[in-house]
Image 1 (cartoon, helix red, strand yellow):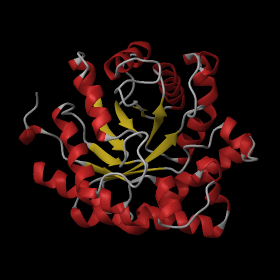
Image 2 (cartoon, rainbow, N blue to C red):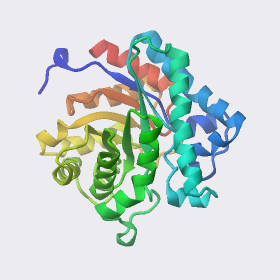
Image 3 (tube, helix red, strand yellow):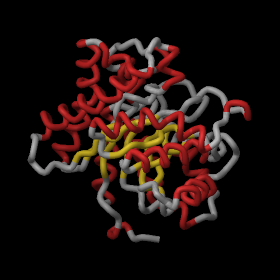
Image 4 (cartoon, rainbow, N blue to C red):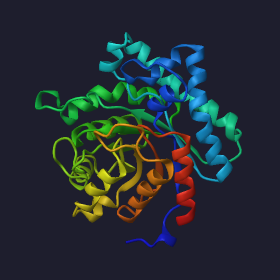
Length: 308
């Protein structure tokens, strides 16, 4: 186990974009899709208003920052539900990277050597159910996600991440698509109350499967869209220490699954997420998902600064 004084410094990620856009900025997101805001001037301004405080926070506190593009839903099935075809989605994914790149330059200063990562967010094909007839093979997932990965890569994203990933096959597909597009890729799994993926596999098993099928091509693995307590259960139940060493970050929810209300207050949320570093000592990226916003990320920064 790596000692705390040997741990890599933290990178701050942004929060729960969809819930923050709705709750803080009063936006209406059909199908929980933030990318639709890119199609109108007021929507783009709302996106800038969402991201800017996180970048400023990292700048002011001296942390590297990673911001995810608002493209979790910008894939064929979800796009079709919202009236966006393949050409529209290519434009949307491109515009998302351009918006964030410009905002980073405006906020941190272009050419100042600032440490900022624009991460291309590749969301799951399905997220509201998980049955055998809705599962993809790795080859199917690669073909499905390749157009979005190519668009994000061509637009200049620094990396892509398969986010809220339900099983290893979809993660394998995104990593392979990224290899073809020549862009670094990570995989971020989601776990349930039992700390396991939707197909019943442990985090260690899923990581091992993705690495085995891709030659360990992913730059690392994350967990998102789960409460810190649920992730702690998943990590504690894993025997694959080598696989857990591949975990590079967490972007978690303020509330446990099934709980009503806003969830943990910022300091309690931050304490729970930062504590996961004891089980995954190579984790460096810390941010939020559903129900989190700037106060939660500020609390993560304070908690991380005390430990680094």
